[in-house]
Length: 464
Image (cartoon, rainbow, N blue to C red; front, side, top):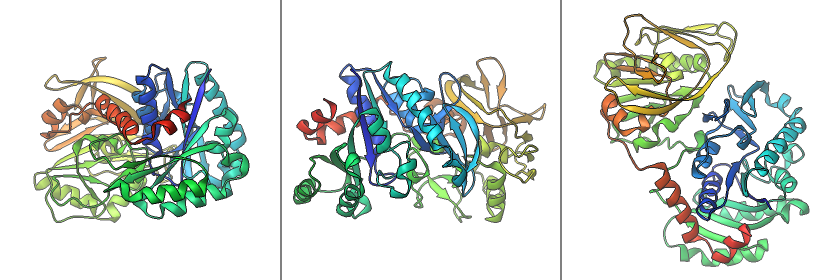
């Protein structure tokens, strides 16, 4: 009989994705067939599905923890913000449309039905489904339109774990307030709570656990420490550490509509740049973006276009990935208003390429090799086509023999997300040594972390 576990939070970025992946890996190690599920996600970090289309990067990461390819039903509704109030809506892997927030809520009942349809398909194939919530489970203004938190957990009959982040401060208020705001039919679904990202001596929180258990009437799964040895792909831009890293030789421009910033996961500490810096870097990345033209205009408004050119003259390797690749060219055109209403914007002119944004979106996993013959696996998620000058040098060669990307002295542009996760590729093209710890090792560390700091009886009651 299918078992369903729901991981909810007191807020965004408290560790729900971590716990979901940890439970997925633990159950797989126990011999169960497990799938992750998040009915609705909001993130510009996405990944191609095995059947085509895309889902949120966190659910693709959780699928990896289960030993599975990314499947559209694991994240049936994905919102990809492309303005302050609007998003591209991806439903069961495919682009459904662009909507403003107010308009979106007119469609939630239909989307709930589609999300339940996706869940039922997973339920027919797996022993366990570990479902992740979004934001806080106590968003009272959205309760009647909720398609991903406790309303979903109730519909699928899931036990719920509530996760809070002590690093943010106010952990007592966040846990007690969250539970107090829940209606009775949702409150009874929450079977335990977890305190995440504790620093220092955990025994100092023993009295806090006693208070919370008495006040909430549910047991504490555990007090879980922050473990910097575990590095997994983050769900959204809240996972970016934007503090300046003075000793880093690698800079990444923090674009307003940044997407797929997991391209830098293996590079350790990087400096996130939002304005020109005095320091000369060895490598400067322009990352992916959900709105190339808007972010190109922002780049100019900040003076970062001139700064990038100055870095290049000073010896930095300039690397553009996806939307960043498009920016490095001579011109980006959007005649159909795919991403914005600007029509066309001149690029930084560091590469002899031109881009026209058009549908449909390209979403695929691909195998490639570098000029030196190093093979690697990467993925593409982008709108439009980029044409390269006939005599320009490509970045890589795809398995079908076609060339991809563009290189010029001190400049690289590519659509291939994840290419630089490969140690050999990073060394050959960037002259960087990366963290080569495999993802499988990270997922096992995550499951070990869950077991080590959980109270066994509470852990087993959640999984019974």
